[in-house]
Image (cartoon, rainbow, N blue to C red; front, side, top):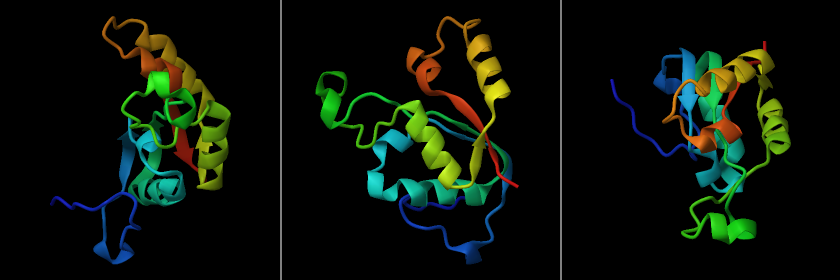
Length: 126
């Protein structure tokens, strides 16, 4: 089944959506307006049973127009800000797998450099 909704709108809990052991969400958070970041993360959490692989660009937005000429990054966050936001939404940073993912990424020449700056692994807090 395919379900389509705007990630800025709360998921209807009556939909009975399946939870997934691993969820990947890259190149999304920085494109969502700050006022919808918590809703987006709660939606992702509702679908995540175990692990979330996430990227959240620290670049662009109002303060770095030269790195985001089309102003597509509405909510760039530095990693300490991502940690704070994620913890407030019921996730914990999984440091070792995050570091292993980064280390192993160098085996691939075509791995996006911007993912190396922001890719991280998270667990849903129990």
